[in-house]
Amino acid sequence: MLNLIRNKKFNVYKTLNIVNPLIPIATDEMFLRTISGNDDCILHMYTLPNSAIIGAPDTRVPFFDEALFSFYRNNIIPAVRNIGGLGIISDKGILNLSIIMNKPKENFSINEGYELMTEFIKAVFPEGANKIQAIEITNSYCPGDYDLSINGKKFAGIAQRKIKDSVVVSIYISVFGDQQKRANIMREFYDIGIKEQQINYKYPKIDPNCMETLEKLLHKEFTLEDVYERVEKVLYSLDCEQVEGEYTEEMIEEYNSIFEQAKERNESYLEGK
Image (cartoon, rainbow, N blue to C red):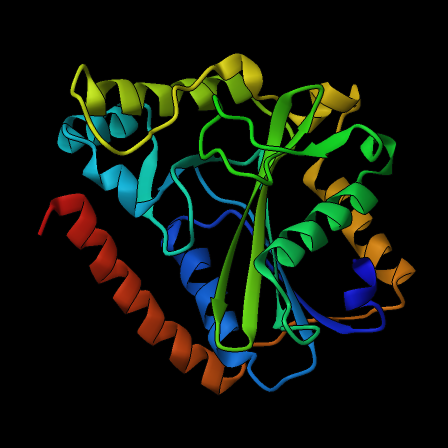
């Protein structure tokens, strides 16, 4: 599957220690919209402040306002994303990574996008490659078919979005930090937001013990710089050219428009307008 990106040119963007979680959401969307017709790929790596990136279904829990306050009480900034799934927690120990490209082949399927990212992460962490499984961890937050886990403990989740022939495959990786605390914050959100109400939508019943950081799962300390270097080595091994990404005028103009839309959308969801 990694051969689909072999010999590609990658424009690499790093946006670190961002104050507003809407910024990378809008940036990924901008990359997706502006890459059309370009054979180059984009690699976007970023970290966020203490944030809850929630999905639109999360805003429909019966007691959303009360649940939302649980984030603020935990010094968490909430934001609603436009890419699939339910809520996740992000902080300085979570690395977010997106690959944005035009479809690398005819009839490039959704599952192939997930499999590409899975194989990429296995290459980045070869010491765990034989242990990493892509299988739904139902009691994690934001469960999905391509949750990445080791020994039944989830450390990463993958999402995907397409526009015409362009695709962004995104993953969050729990590198270090207190993963149980992150899971407990999301569990509290659902406990407060749903209470004993009977609802049709299936929200996860979160068990913090089914999630963990890569540091603990691989018994090895990591810094984010370590992971950046590993990512670069994988791309070099695939004979990919890597250049520091630059923002063109077209990209900046598109970003400004997308960010304003994301801001309005976010306010609409969070303030119930």
